Length: 149
Image 1 (cartoon, rainbow, N blue to C red):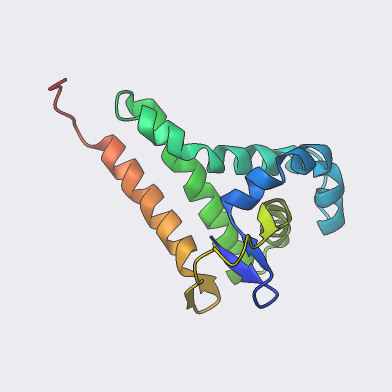
Image 2 (image 1 turned 135 degrees about the vertical axis):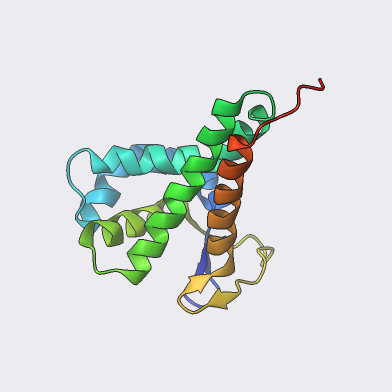
């Protein structure tokens, strides 16, 4: 989970993306135009978000094939960098990309089951865990492997 919006009503996470997957495909243009994204960025945000939520599957496949492991680690790294730059910088495109992803991944809490968000400055702890895990995944994919199986 990246953030808790509105003091406890809306959570931003990959689960929210899956809950809104039909609306995300149907209203991608509307959400992107609302925040000011134009052109090919509209559907790139959707593709990056989709790869982010299924990256765990690529990491599991990466136990056998190194390319899948690298591919599975790059998507969370890209999403993490977009959120960090969207919060910390004044680059307009990063703000727009992060806001579009927040629209796609936000959903109301399910019976207050989501864990507590630990804030570190303006960021949530989950954001740092995602970026750190992606970097570790890329390092692990680059290390040599023993062929024991």
